[in-house]
Length: 287
Image: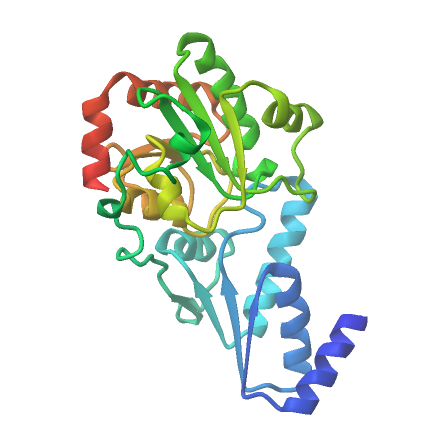
């Protein structure tokens, strides 16, 4: 209530023609205040489905919250076609014209594989002293439960028993919200010398150039931006067969899409790329 009051004070002061809100909680508060102050154009921008991986009461509450925000908006933007279709059918939005597709994308002049060589001293493999014949699996994103980190770590542990030359690069930070288990955090930090926590990285093209395969077993996504970036860098991708990811990856062509939370399928997909360099090269080229 305090936040809504602050919103209304600001809106009264600056008299905006447009209020453009993002993220579920801020959008609910901002949209309520904007309606109360009769802002003529109210845009809700959806980057991902918050309730996609939720169950039970939490899912029902989040769904109702989304319906309310969309109803109060004059226009709702969604970042992928599968996300828009999901909202139409799952939330049963009758006014489909209100849901506008604003497609996501990347700058391919930045994500250009030709600007890097394997001998680059700034290559993460070289900086970490990893042999050139190693197979490096990469992940880029927040290190939280909903990004499928638990499943990725389990898959990597199993594969490590069979393949001694594999390494795991984790580009991202361990976060407290939606936090990993203490055991998962301990493995990331102290598990073995083949797991590398790189932290927050600004030079993502260099990161992609240092890996052989991107793996993103996420539970929910608006659009798989890191998947598109890896593909642009000619790297194949293993990701979840869910809303958002299906817009970025063509299954069996630029990567492999696996069932969400299915560790065995993640292992099988990674292993196929480890054992088949030509498939890896072809899917990277297609990407």
